[in-house]
Length: 467
Image (cartoon, rainbow, N blue to C red; front, side, top):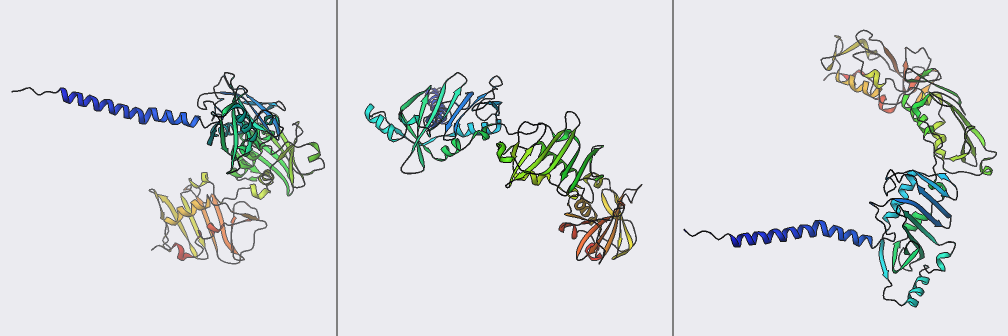
């Protein structure tokens, strides 16, 4: 029998393998590298954003010159996309805003030309004439209003993008590239005009650190405040906040304290800007460790300023800070009928009222709610929905004194087997609105119930009747 000749098949197989490998290399290795190289030729700032660390930056615009240096070279966090420690070195020595500088460098690294103009084939005289027309000649780059951004890399190399005149057609600007102070005249970049506004419309405040306080809200264990509506006294007892001796809404107190701890300057005003401002409120926060935090908010011509005897500067702040911390007592009080912690402990519920003359009793047994009494048959599955809403729906207002009852009412008790009446509320209508009064507090007040809770309580028996 004649042996088969495998040689042609092996040659064909090898050829296919080589061609396949070349195609793979072309598609997945060479092509991406070429695309990256092509993209790099359209960037006025010639540096590798993925690997090069930026040791310093220098920005010049009509607003002046701003310079900064990175303090985190050893940590390798001075790259584009990383948040590093920065110092503003000019026009003052100031701590830098790491987040804003990171975002700024992201914008810088993303700057790419929609088109380029080649001057390679032009004579030197013609090239100089064109550069002058574009606002990029040596004399015109010294003009006061000429803008540039310069980055100094870790190895000392300086890359610069100079911004010249607007292109007469389209929303673009002529930009020239320079390396170590020497401008590249072979290629001029046409960059979208929004890069100029993004890079040069920011003043010193944008780049400097705007943090006012340096504490965490979890460090506060008590506070006092003098506000337009009166006085606040907050106290942390066994991990639970009280406000003026009453149960507080833990989330709302936490939000207030976070607003103070995270307060940031909007601007750093001159003395004349805030002199004569009216004091609006004062706060004194006591910390578990460290000095107390004291400050007041001033208002002048609809501008708000924060002043503290412990801080050297007076800061202009956003008006929203005033809204966040100017809270009345009742806005900080607990306004949930049940908390999430109380909710999970409830295994017994009783309700009675206008539509339920015989009390209806429910128990949580075997993983579900059942009705324990022999009266009107109701739907026990409604109980869990009511409890969930009582523990999640904030009520908008606390009425003092409690409004008089003028319609149907319902008394609800919640607890467990040992203490079935641990919580008790009278829910009733008054002037067409639904209120809930805590029968165990001894205080003559009532919660004005939210719209969601208005429909949750079975003041009418029909809504809960078993089908």
